Image 1 (cartoon, rainbow, N blue to C red):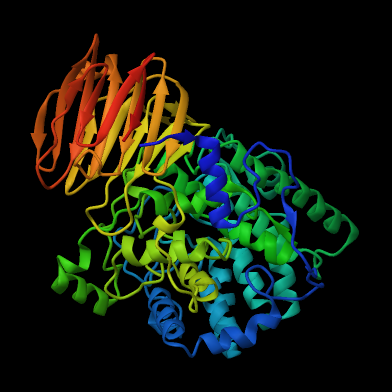
Image 2 (cartoon, rainbow, N blue to C red):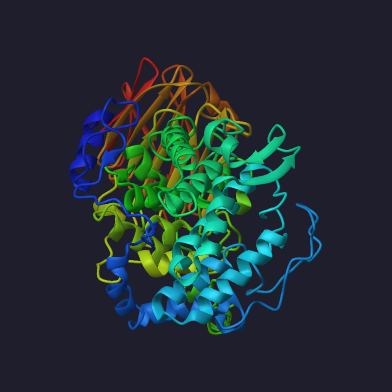
Length: 604
């Protein structure tokens, strides 16, 4: 297997994606100015996720099959078909009290007003703007979200305060012209001068917009950072220039806060994420970072603020692409047709819930594709809103094949604003594209030292390998030293220490690649020239932790090459090839494996 340097392959990837060659850490304008952007005028709404001129097209979308399906799910999530306030409410009077458990779909959320707001925009029926106002008034009075950590009053720390503010900002933007002047000015003032009260969480202090805009509590390598930044950004872009906050003092305050929020928007990426989507605290915390308010804020920056944080930035785009790289579809609906059909018809939850497979690392694994809460449930509805046009077909393939829904749910599974954003963002007129036509077979997050390999994008038998030789941490630790191998029905994690240490070099090729540390070398080959679907070779002291043997489609053999012991791991549903020592190298089928100065190399 001929090898090429990682830089060459990364350049090839950029050509394939037609992206500007700007990676994390390089000096280039960031954010970029949106070409032809015209700033919203005072009182012009909607503005955060679409502009007034987009309404005719959105109303046409409401007449399509997909538009009707998304709006149908929105009405379910609002409860009472969206024509009256919900019947179920959280009874908690403080965060983490969890007074009312197992609330049904349609129970009251902080994002109900935004849901009514979309219906108002599409229909111009005053009852929807009125419902949104009644819901906001309840929130201002202290009604908590179905997840009692989210609340206007006394939220569960700054992490929850930011998205809570963002929820009201979305409602304000969508309902502006359906509310009387006095009420919308009241809301604008409440947003700008937000004070959720004191908290003992996140280092303590007063939960104010000023703090979240200028002195964000917790560092960017904590999942508590970006939600604050995103929520504040939504609020500021929503009210900028409007009556009620257009006095000299308030206007100057908004600009000062926005300047700070723009800087914090970049810090959320450079301070927490690597260049291929790995987060300091791992995958579960990473979904909290992106889902609660940050990704919607990136969309609002472009539409309402004229600033593009995504184009030309590999690190930002890989917030989405990492899911395409690693998600494997399970049999899902094909294996459980009766259950899936019942769930789809009841529309109570995503019929694929629990079926997508993702080899996550770090704490909070329940957030990965949870589909039920405010974290881990908005990847596609929100991601389509920031993805460059050339990436949307890849994301669409990932949704359709990775989640395997019987009936598309469009991410409108548990929260109304997911349906709102799905209605606005979901691509209805594009053809999906197999990620294998775009993504390489080896990806390296160079900041956090994560190595990812994948053989194809086809079905539940796809092979994914994840190696993290050295652990890392934000506030939470992501242990390293192990190798995760999934494929052909097998899921194996090789023990910590198998491939350990800070990585030194790596090489990538068309069918895999090699990663190296001072203690060992890991090579992966998907070319099938060995006679197996996947060949994994490990050299170094960590090989001693492995035992020879077979487990289904996976076989491990330990082979001596001179003074070195190598682990030869193969994945195949057929007969496993046997490694032969030939002079100074190994041969498996037509694959030749050599070890020089502790570094593996492959050649046909």
